[in-house]
Amino acid sequence: MTVVPAVSLAAWLWLLFARGFFWRTDVRLPAQEEPGVWPSVCVVVPARDEAAVLPSSLPSLLAQDYPGRAEVFLIDDGSTDGTGELACELARRHEGLPLTVASPGEPPAGWTGKLWAVRHGIGLARAREPEYLLLTDADIAHAPDSLRGLVSAAHAGGFDVVSQMARLRVESVWERLVVPAFVYFFAQLYPFRWIGGGRKGSREGNTGSGERKGTRTAAAAGGCVLLRAEAAERARIPDAIRHAVIDDVALARAVKGGGGRVWLGLADRVDSVRPYPRLHDLWRMISRSAYAQLRHNPLLLAGTVLGLALVYLVPPAAVLVGAATGQAATAVLAAAAWLVMAGTYLPMLRYYRQPLWLAPLLPLTAFLYLLMTVDSAVQHYRGRGAAWKGRTYARPDAVAEEG
Image (cartoon, rainbow, N blue to C red; front, top):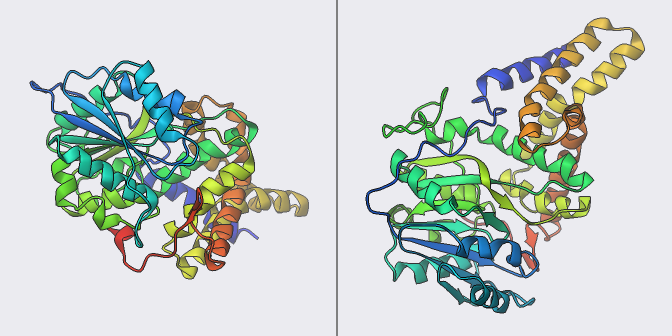
């Protein structure tokens, strides 16, 4: 009765101290240094049926206060809701950076729609010979100094990729329960301190206290990725990752695998405006890529389910069992594991400005993620895996997602 909760507690102590302090939320944009001559930047925005969010996001890009040359390329990926026309209308109404709207047509076999649109946008941008590319999603709103800060951070740290995890919308009941945990679990998989490989603001390659130099961990957040154009060409972005469903992680792996330097952290002034008001909306968003994250491997799926159960579900269950059966040691060990779990979740709840009483409910959220992951596998084997906005992507034949 005491062995399993003891193992769970040991797992949480390991996560607390040996997983790159993933639970901390102080990895923010590195120290910045403005360049003497501001490099040119092309912003590439892939968009498919985004008319509902464009009025809240696109004007923020056009209004960027950037001292150098910059322009925006919105690539309309076969929208049926007037996304391209609305983008042109917004550009007419809002003065700012020049906007080009283009459409690449349907993606050929072996390409995801988003990456085919990104390829088209990068192709158009190359004619301007930019030093940097900003890849950002159509639902992302940027503060006026966002581009300036990204470029300054890349210049100061010598980074080939500077990516910020946009602050997602948290308003509905389900968003409050699920969204902060989404970022928490992502950081647990890809500890931000392990990605940059060193100390914050240092030209020698460091990105924060406690960070390890030379780690192979690589990830990015697709909503906001500043990419050095030279590094993109060297890593063959996006061709090398053309069928990656989790394209942001694949991009970071490709760049880092080619000797590039990557930084990822939480954003303060970059926000997603996309609403996920219902559990169904969040379920679709997470389950479409969950099994791809496990490389469509049944053994990894089984291990993930067992791991989630041991780490997140055993503590509350063992507390109840121990209390009901009078097994004090079982209840104490399980309660300690639950306490450490909740404690590591508190910083993320503070970052999202959510009530701290949600922390003990993390096992419930983890159970939902377990179900979403299993559903992702079920849909994959039914031929409906990775379905998004009218397209379904089959399992890739190559290993581009691995980088």
